Length: 116
Ligand code: AMP
Image (cartoon, rainbow, N blue to C red):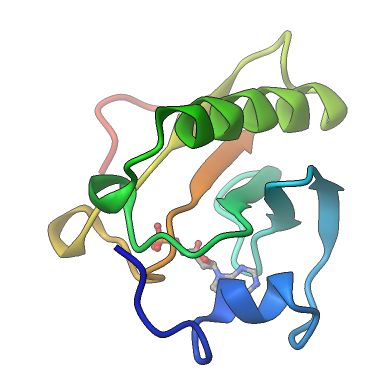
C-alpha cells in the first residue's frame, strides 16, 4: 500500500528535499546513516518507492534486493566479518516510527539477545 508521500521523510530524502548522509545507493534503494545511532554502525536501507511497512510490501524481488543492499552496506561498513544485525520494525508495537519500510543495519558492537 502506498500513501501520500509528500510528508514522508524517507520519500523527501529520496527526492533530495531533506538532507541525509547517504552511504550507498542502488537504482531502487537508498542507505543513510541513522540520525540517532544505536550502534557504532547504524545505517537505514529503504526503497526509493514508498511502501508503508514490511506488511504492505508485495514485491518479493524488492524485498530480496533490500536484503542484498543491507549485506552490501555491512561489507562497506566493514562489519560483515565481525557480525551485524538487520532489523525491520513493523508497525506500532514493534517500534516502527517512520511509516516507510526500512531495514536497520547495526554493527560495530556486541549485540544482546533477546532484543528489547
Ligand atoms: P523505526 O523506529 O524502526 O521506524 O526507525 C526509524 C529510524 O529512523 C530511527 O532509528 C530514527 O533515528 C531514524 N530517523 C528518523 N528521521 C531520520 C532522518 N531524517 N535521517 C536519518 N535517520 C532518521
